[in-house]
Structures are given as C-alpha cells and as structure tokens.
Amino acid sequence: MRRAAMHPDVTRVEVIPPYGLRLAFADGTTGFIDGARWVLGKTAGVFAALRDPVEFAKVFVDVEAGTIAWPHEIDIDPDTLYELAHASPESS
Image 1 (cartoon, rainbow, N blue to C red):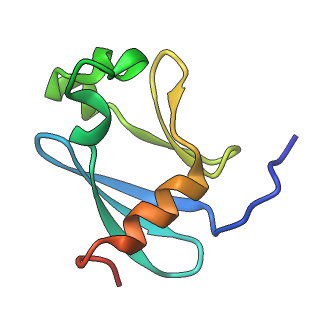
Image 2: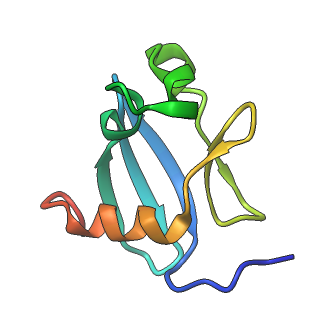
Image 3: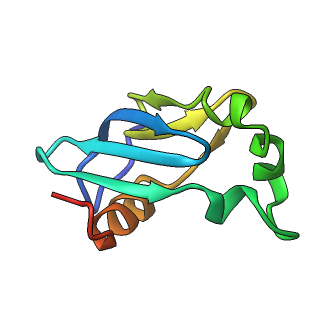
C-alpha cells in the first residue's frame, strides 16, 4: 500500500563519501544530508551496520516507498528526508 505523502518522493540518491547524501525529489528540488547523524555514535541502532562507508554506499531509491533504503530493510521516512534536505544550505 502506498503511503500518504506529506512531501514529494525521493527520485535519485548520490553518495558523497563517506556519509553524505545528495537527494533529488519529485518536485524538482534537491538537497544534501549528512548521513553520519544516523550511523555514528552509541545510538546508531540498526544504522550501525552502515558505519562501513562501503555498506553505506549501497543506498538505493525504493520507488514503491518513495524513499531511500539499504539492503537488509534499512530505510528512512521520506518526509524526514525531505525536511532534512531542505534545511541544509546546500538545498535547491
């Protein structure tokens, strides 16, 4: 079942090593997120598996969910991504 979106879906992801993500959205906007916020630190939880930059770089767009994901069913709410990406001074 498709989610009720508050914000446009993610349409493209590019990794900026080691943990940066440049995202494009269905509304034509883009933004940058520092993914270190999820993978570093003691509270990383499921994201700790992505501390290895090689694993982090396996990110892909989950078209059905309108977000980004990694193998092993790790993903992030697309509305959270949109908010974070548009709070960055590198967003457009």
